[in-house]
Amino acid sequence: MMLIRAFAVCVLAAASLGIAYANGAPIRIQLSKLAGVVTVGTNPASGFAEITAVEGDVVVMTDGLPRLTNELYQSWLVNSRTGERVSVGKFNVTAEGTSRTHSIVAIGNREFNLFVITVEPEPDPNIEADSRIVLAGYWPGKEPVGAQAAAQATARAQGTPIAGTPIATLTAAPPLVTLPAGVSIQPPLTLPRTGDPGFGALAVFAIVMLGAAFVAGSGRR
Figure 1 (cartoon, one colour):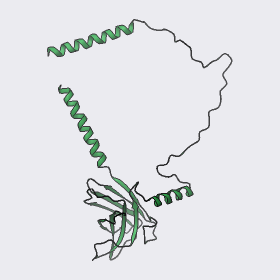
Figure 2: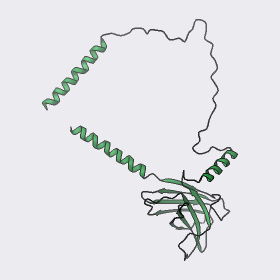
Figure 3: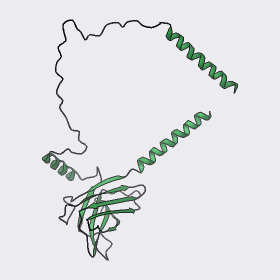
Figure 4: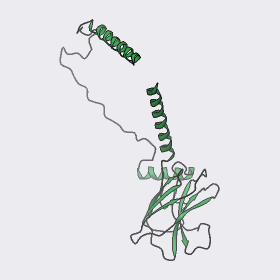
């Protein structure tokens, strides 16, 4: 009974860990000069945001943005359907044009489908987001239908694989092999009889006896 209880506890613990890991898996959003969303900037900048919704953990990394003076970049979680925006924090880039920020945001049950980085004046008297968007990216699987179609059309035109689409490959058939005269690949109808026919029965009997002895010994304890 003790062994059964211990096994059940282990199973429940493993299941709990699996659920916690699944809920805490971060979502990575690729940031780029997203057409129709980004409004300013010609630098070939890019980046990504990793968001763990349960903990509200947000890590943002960028590369290629110009360093600002009297202004700062600001990251936002956006729901493009409702217009809701939540600030993730402000930052500037290094002299090399790179940045890494880490923030904790109370996301809760709110839903977002877009991540944007704007340019804001510093100091900034307005709590609302500026219209100057330099990088943006949609949540994986939450892109608008038009954006998905445009991305797929561009990928097809460039001959690049589309994410989530299996790539068909053609494999040449193996050449035919001619067997020598008198050689056949037909298996025999019966297999040769080998070994002692009584060996299997003896093995089963021995296993049963060992099991009975183990049960009897456990009962005496």
